[in-house]
Amino acid sequence: MKNYLFLLCSFCFISIGYSQNHTNKKGDTHLWGVTTIEALSSGDYAEWHTEYSKDYKTNISEEETNLLDGLNVEIFVGTWCGDTKFLVPKFIETWKQLGLDLNRLSITALHDEGSDYKQGPKKETVGRNIHRVPTFVFSRSNKEIGRIVERTVHDLDTDMMLIAKGDPYKERYQGVVLLNDYFQKFEGDTLLTIENYRSAMKLVRRELSSSGELNSMGYVLLAQGQLDQGEFTFRLNKYIYPYNPNIIDSYGEYLFNQERYEEALAQYLVLCQVVSERMDLNGF
Image (cartoon, rainbow, N blue to C red; front, side):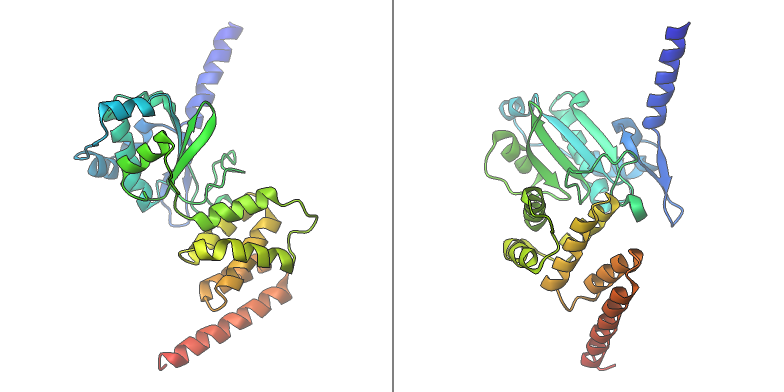
C-alpha cells in the first residue's frame, strides 16, 4: 500500500512538473518549467508548431546522422518568443526525420518578465548563461560541445553538423560569451572597479552587434540574484553606449529597485537630456 501511494504521489508530482504554466501581465498563459514535445505541439501552441514544422525537410545525410546519434540536447524555450516558435519546431522535426532518440531532448520553458525573467520555476538556468531563447545546448558524454543561441549562424543543418563534428563554430552573441567567461575567471574581492570596467570593455566591445545583448544579460543576472554582475553589465553597457536612452533607463531602473534613489535620479536626468537633444536634432 505504501509503495502504491508513493508511486501515485510521484506520478502526480511529475505531472505537475510537466504542466506548469505562468500568466504574464498581458494575461497570456505560457508554459513554464520542464515540458515535453507533446505540450509544445498541442493546445495553444499547436498552430505555430504545425506552421513551422509541416513542410520542413532536413538535408542531413544518413552518414552525418551517425555523428548526432548519442548527443544530448537541452532546449530552453519561451512559448512567448517568436524565435522559439520559428526554430524549435524545425529542430524537433529534424530530430524526428533522422530517427534520433527523442528521449535525448530535454525541454525547459522559461518565464518572460519580472523577477523570473528567462528563468524556470526552479532556477534551472542559474550559472548556465542562458540569456536568449531558444538556446540549444549540445553535449556529449556530459560535456557541452556547442550551442545554438536564438537563431542559427548559417542554417539549422549546417549549425548542427558543425557542432557535432567539432568544427569551428561560434554561437551568436560572442560579447555575452566573453563577459560570462570574464565573470567566471574573476578572482578579485571587488568586481565594480574602473579597472575591471576598462578591461571588460576592451574584451567585449568589438564583439557586440547591438546594445540589447548586454542589456538582456543584465536582466537575466538580476533575476538570478547576481546583483554585482548585473550592475557591472548594465554599467559596462552604458559606458559602451553612453547615449542610448534604453540603456540609461535600464541602469536607472536597476538603481531605483535597489533603493539607490539619488543615483537613479541622476541617470534619469541624463536620460531626459539625451532625449531632449535628440528631439532638438529632429526638429521638434
